[in-house]
Image (cartoon, rainbow, N blue to C red; front, side):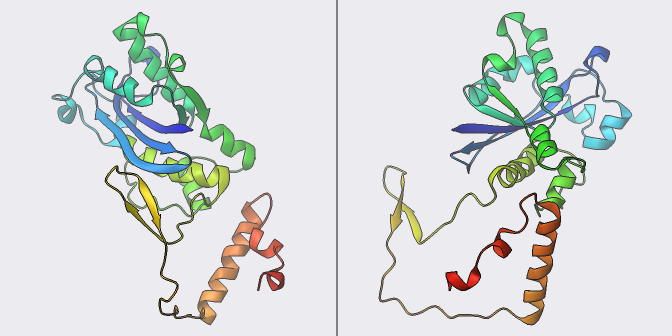
Amino acid sequence: MRQVVLDTETTGLEIEEGHRILEIGCVEIVGRRLTRRHYHQYVNPERDSDDGALEVHGITRQFLNDKPLFGDIWEGFLEFVNGSELIIHNAAFDVAFINNEMKLLSPALGVLTDYCGIVDSLALARQKHPGQKNNLDALCKRYSVDNSQRELHGALLDAEILADVYLLLTGGQVTLGLGEETKGDNGISTRVKIDANRPGLKVIQASHDELAAHERKLDRLDETSESGSLWRALDVEQIK
């Protein structure tokens, strides 16, 4: 499955007041793996941002004056998202603004759902964590996703953060690399078998402080996860 995590920044909150999109950021996921392909574009909204919106994203009209209009970038944007399942946090907001831009450009373009499926990660988070804060910052804290660079909102940065959160929200660890990989002439990754006669690996035992930190982490999982800590549910003695 091809999924695209999407975020936008806008000049304000209300389409009815003439607010427009000024930035679009997208990150691609295929088979629950981040591919490192992305789409990012600043857009000239031809208007000022509200003071409140400017405090959130910090993107000034002066910075956007030489950026393309939505009419100049819509083909590349739709080409990137077409046929995918879009992952959007509070999807109704972003989808409404994108649909408005498409309508202003040409009603014949239709709406975003003519090109993509939509998954609202906020709705998923509310279902999994009812009664708790489920904004992106709260989810980063809950799932230990680093958002230290998020002093201001940015569409691409927020899409990258949301991609990490979404994969953890919907399935926990998604990849496990065993051995080394190399790429052949055709660009396809192939697995390299590790030499059986290689030197043994040095075993480093966890310190007392590290074990204590591990137990605190498990306590946190017990408090925040519906199913509790999987590690504690396992019979560790049978695994040894």
